[in-house]
Image 1 (cartoon, one colour):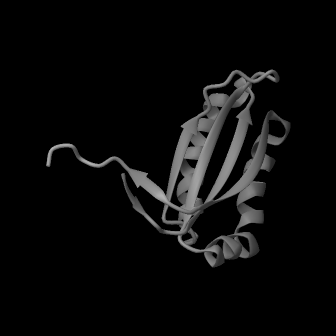
Image 2: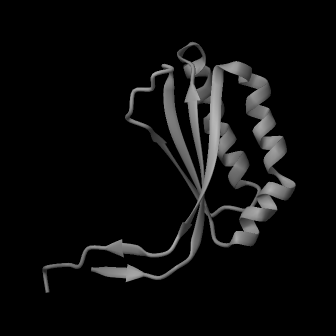
Image 3: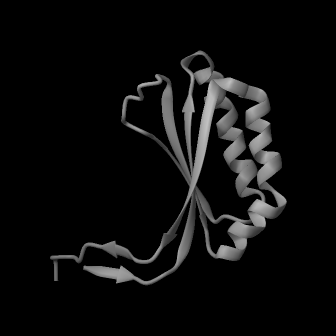
Length: 116
C-alpha cells in the first residue's frame, strides 16, 4: 500500500430532500455547489446519493467539500456559511433537512501496482 500523509478537511453536508421538490432541488444544488466553491475556501466538491432508505422517506444526498486547511473551513463559517445555508432553507423550507459534519483526513491510501 502507498499512502500520502496530507491533512485536509472535509465539510460534509447530508441532505434529505422531500420527493415533492426533488427535481427542483437537483436543479438548485447544481448551481449552489459552484457558489460554495466560488468562495475560494474549498478545492473540490463531491456529490453522492446515499443508498439507504430513510424511514422519513425522501431522497438523501451527501455533498463533501474539501478544504486544504482548518483556517479555510473556519473562514467559510465566518464569512460565507450563513448566507449560503439560508439560500436553500428559504427556498425549500420544511421540504429538506440538512445536517453537517466535519472530517479531518489523516492519510489517504492507494493500492500498489502488481505490474512491477
